[in-house]
Image 1 (spheres, rainbow, N blue to C red):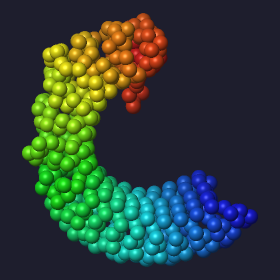
Image 2: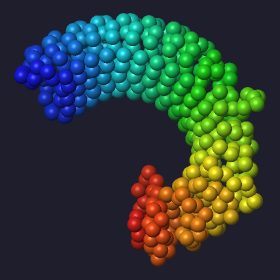
Image 3: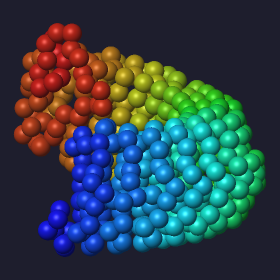
Image 4: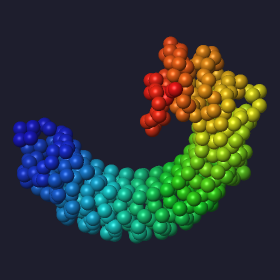
Length: 435
């Protein structure tokens, strides 16, 4: 880079070098972005590398094998705004490591085998907005560790083995908007733990050990808009009228509870893989646009009652529920429905008399039921805007699949496949199992 006097960005990725000459960047004073990523032979970082790059704004040292960071190594980078150190086996950090980085706005320290943080390490980072400490072993956090982080908006603490949080831990974080505490060992939250976080809107506490959660009792109840509490041990959950998004998959929930209110703001709800047998507790959320209640046990689902109450619904997933009937076919038309998944149930026939009341459907997934007949022409007749159909899960006749494929292709309709690859025991046509 000796003659690249105007160079502003340098990316040294997966080059397998173990060190750099001390004056390697001495001719690159205009350098603003430096990324040294994925060099597994790189064990240490030298302060001399950064002495001649005073304008550096972004420094990425992720995914190397750096085992220690010496005090003062970043002291010449006073204008640095983003520092990414994740996925290096550092183990511990010196209290003064970041003391000369007053303009830092984003800091990533994830996956660094950290077991503790020295009090004061973040004290000079008043402009810091994003901090990622995920995937370490920070089981206990001192109540003063985040003091002075007055600008912090996003805090990621996932996968640390945290069992409890001090009520004072987040004191002063008035701008905190999002916190990720997923993958820890939490069983409860102190009702006042976020009392100073007046702008907290997004909370992720998935994959913990909660048995119950009562959002209205929390100090942040009025500001929270987005909650993920999936993969816990919940049997009950109570939400507020202000919540807009709730993911509570993989629990043991039999129904939702909510504060009494003339209206609720919930627009996205996912309760997949719970113990629901009735949708009554869901019907009060009349603004719902997205609903996933797959992998529950309904047997018979009154689709007319559900969509009649939730007339803004655009996406509905009721797959893997053991449904054998959708009830009375005389339901009102609902033009908002765009995506419907009824796959992997016990339906003996494709219930077009019910489904025709969703004329604006664009994606329809229905494979894995008990019927093996498919009238593609009739399907298209009902759904003029159809773009994707999902048929995986049923071993159709190969001749039927071939005919249907031609019909769908003539009408610009494609076959949808799930995230997992389909493995056929016998023949296949266009990736669809058939016999």
